[in-house]
Length: 279
Ligand code: KIV
Image 1: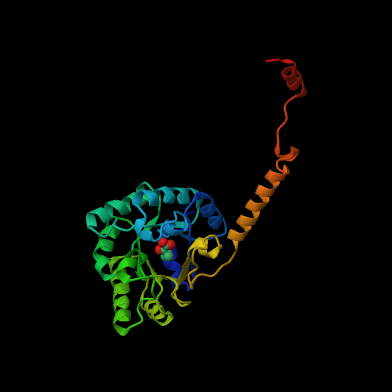
Image 2: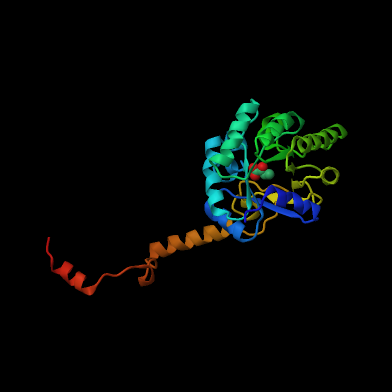
């Protein structure tokens, strides 16, 4: 049975830490699902780690939907959360509801995630009222990178920290079932986590969040343009990939691939007949 938002919320109640990772395609979704991951995010980090954009700002609804469908086909058990891309929900509530609906109806996701605190609370409330579970995202909100002036830790001043606490409460009151806290000081994420009934999922927010989310390509060493401080590398698949590719190139060039083992034969009688035929 697929994990539900109630299962995720119950994990906080039981004091169980919640692991979450991003996935963007069928094979990786299948692998992380089979490894036991309960919670998958089709993040708009897709734009950087898969599509090669310089930020998430360029990602479109159609690109997100394309990848959400693949992830949903690959993940049989995990709850799949779909990131709402830049400008798919900010301009007006009706568009936000329509686009969130597409994530579930066309994409097959179980919930959506959107960035923003108090100013997005009304949008979150209306989407939730339509029966669409929403995950909030506050702190460093990469879609606002141009406004923030870079990828910086948020909530370090008393005023900014108090604002983030208010943002978290506003999202909870609006009906969000969980909230991503990105790049906020550990002490602040602990306070927010203690004050909320819904789970906080941290990325660069220290160990006291109810769960953690990581970008799969950072964890697996598959994206090397830059490695964020908050990422821990669990494997170096990029190197494995390059070594395997170099080996393949060498074997093709040397005639060592393919051998009989990777080839097919035809019946001797068919061959004899063929050899008897002259053009
Ligand atoms: O797009 C993404 O991968 C995210 C995570 C960093 C939380 O939003």
